[in-house]
Image 1 (cartoon, rainbow, N blue to C red):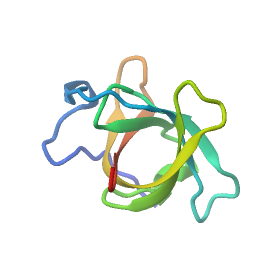
Image 2: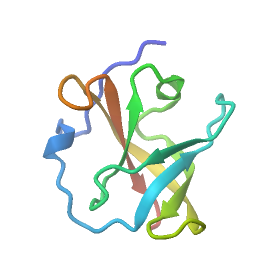
Image 3: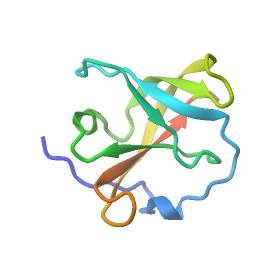
Length: 115
C-alpha cells in the first residue's frame, strides 16, 4: 500500500496549527485491527485542540490510518498513573515531516468526539 503525505483541509503544516486550549491528556493508546499489540504514544502539542501523536514513517500503523477514521482510543490523563478515558476520536490530519527534528515521521492529529 502506498502512503501519500497528506495535509489537513487548510493545507497547514504542523508548525502553523494554533495551540490554544489546555489539554488534560498525556498519552493515548491505540488498539487497531491488524496490529498484534496495543501501541502507546505520548501526545504532542499538549496545549491544543489538536491532539497529535508522532509515528515513524516505517510503522505498519500508518497504513491502517486514514483521515476521517473514527477510532476508539484510550486517553491517559496527566498527573495520574491510573486514570484514563475511553473516547472516540476522528483523525483530522496526517502530515509528513520532511526536515528538522522529526524528519522521517508523521504527525497524526485527532479530534475527540463528544468532548
